[in-house]
Structure formats: C-alpha cells, structure tokens
Amino acid sequence: MTRRSRQQDSDEARKLSPTAPRESARSGAARKGPDGHRANRLLAALQADDFQALEPFLEFERFSAGTVLYEPGDAIAYNYFPHDCMISLVAVLRDGGSAEVATFGREGVVGFASSLVSHEAFGRYVIQVPGTASRLPVERLRRAAEASPSLQQLLRSYIEALLAQTFQSVACNAVHDVEARCCRWILSTQDRVGQDDLALTHEFLAEMLGVQRSTVSIALRALQTSSLIAQHRGMITVLNRSGLQASACECYGRIRRSFERLLPQTNERS
Image (cartoon, rainbow, N blue to C red; front, side, top):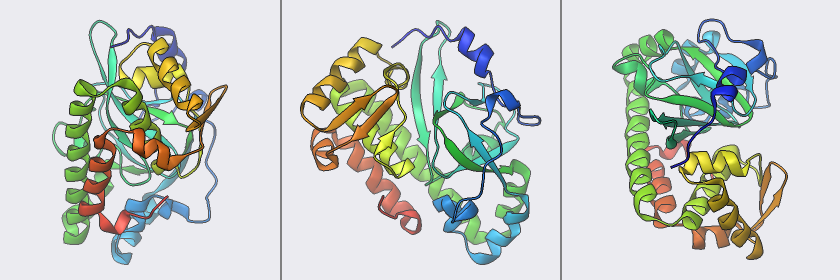
C-alpha cells in the first residue's frame, strides 16, 4: 500500500464544500451535452414521473481530476450522478496509506448509500477521470424515493450492485497480481467514461491500486509491449479491448455481470 504525501495536494485541490463549492477546485460550469442529465444511465432509467420530480433540482457540474468531493466524515449534502467523469471512494489510513474501495461512473450515483445511514462520507470521494456530472441535494432524492416505489427499487438495486462490486474488489486486491488488476481497472474505467483515451497517470493508478508507482509502471509497460494499450503523458489509450479482457482477472466479468443482472435497464454497451 502506498504512502500518500498528499498534504500539499489536499491543500491545493482540498475539496468541494457541499454547501459552497470552491471555484479553484472546478473547471467551471458544465455545458449540457446532447443527453442532458440523462447522460447518467441511472437517471436515464427513471420513469418519466420520477425524472420530472427530480429534474428541476438537478445541476450540471464539471470537475477536474483530483478534485475531492468529500473527505471521511464530511456531511453528505449532495448526490452526484456522473456523465463521463469517474469518481473513486478511497479508504484513507492513519499512516497516509490509501486504497480504492469503490468506483462510480455513468451507471450510478455517488453518496446515496452514505446518506441513508450516517449521512457522513465513508471515505474520500475524489474525481479520478475529469468530466461532468449532475448534482442533486440529498434531501430531494430521499423524498422522491419515499414517494415512488419504482425509484426506491431502482436505488436499492443499485446499492446491491455497488456492494457486490466492493466485495469483489476487496477479494481482487487481496489475491490477484497487479497486471491483471490493472487490466480490470482500465476496462472498468473505459466502461464508465465511454472512450478509448483515458486521462490516467501512473501515480494516480498506483494510489487506486494501493501499490508503488514503480510497480504500476512495470505492469503498464508489459501491457504496452503486448500492444494492449498505448501510453502518453498523463494518458492511457486502449488499443485491444478483447486482449485486456483476456488478461484481466475474473473480477472484471463478475462485477459487470452483477450490474447487468441487477440493473439491466442501465446496461448499454460502451
């Protein structure tokens, strides 16, 4: 597990206050894409009445990589529905070590599970891949779910899929080698952002996998030598998706099948 010397990073990117976002941590107001808020597949899967109840309160946001939405223990004031960005939930340890616990993309929502119980962030929620998302006050989503059995069931199915992902990721991090985990992680990122060019650095990937940067560099070099990916400064390009799938551990397929089974209405192929 890597030691994070992120005190400076925390001071620079610190976090978006749920009640008063810092402009320095944002890339500016997001422009609506062709699908609007429905670029998020969970929002796109809502029944018309449910979406109409939420739409007036949804706001577009654009985030840069490294922006922290919540730190451990922060009050959850907003839920975030990613469009083309990717958000990680990271466990932060006392000694500065960290490891990714869960990831969120256009298939889901950030912060809803936390808001149901303690109303506090489980860990650090950080923007892993830059892009846009829809923001919604937690209370609005909770009230809408209480009033709509269909919305309530959709969110329950999502939470179950998220728990399945987390369970599988814990097992993966414990028993599978770094190269196979890199393949899983790259594939999962591609699924969530919907493009071949992924804005990822070795340092950030190492932090998410809980290993040394040099270990990630060796693994990625092997994948590039096999013509599965190409590397550029701060960028990884997927060249051979089927080859990555063959090299990934079983966890990638298991997590994807869980989402397909529990949330078939959100499962459009990238």
